[in-house]
Image (cartoon, rainbow, N blue to C red):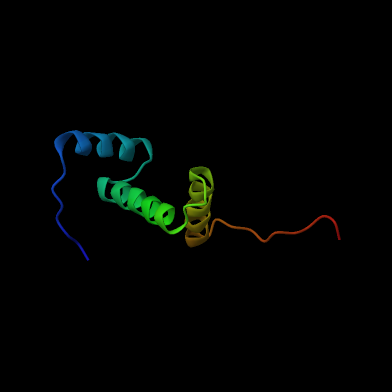
Amino acid sequence: MDITVNLDGEFEEIVQSHSMLQNRSVPQQIEHWAKIGQVVEDNPELSYNIIKEILSGIEDAKSGDVEEYKSTKF
């Protein structure tokens, strides 16, 4: 579902800057931040770094950039 959101000019510049650094569109950057906020609210015991790793792993799995874990102990 697409919606129109009016952003403060200063915030829009911040989003634009971050989206360029992360190779995301402005809507993708806002969605990324919203996902982080949702995870933080749902899981206050998790650190930001853990949340970033979890979201990164989910994106890797969606894109097929995964490989099977093989233990070297057996």
